[in-house]
Image 1 (cartoon, helix red, strand yellow):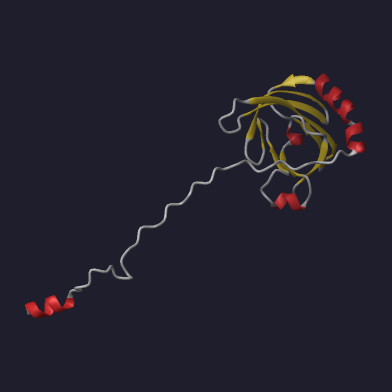
Image 2: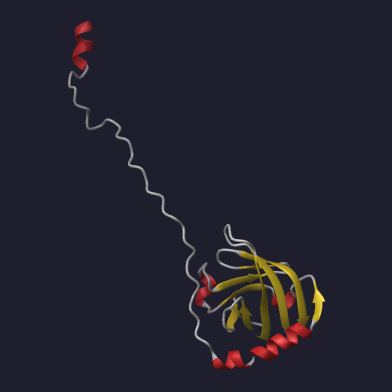
Length: 158
């Protein structure tokens, strides 16, 4: 019986091909935020801008973004299906961007015009505070401007 057991053991000093090899260490990849899209300035949209902002700034102060602005919006119908920088989720107390959320500090609104002061925390950087201007052209089309970006149109997603 002893002979059988010894014969079954490998006498080779070489590791077998089936022996577990340590997995190579993965090199950590630093996550960089994806770049925001470059927008071309639309003269028609830009021309309405100062009036949009003046109407919104003249509106009454409130704590939340009015309901008519709420919803999922995007820069095109195709962008409604893609989670990216071209989609915006607007709610009463926050505006959701691709990689962050702007928390409403206060809102001025006058009908179809609103200016929401948002505080946005992005990574470890100190919070940024800026105004998110909204002007409804219709129930499903809106002009917006925020941060240092030019004004542009977004469309309500179905």
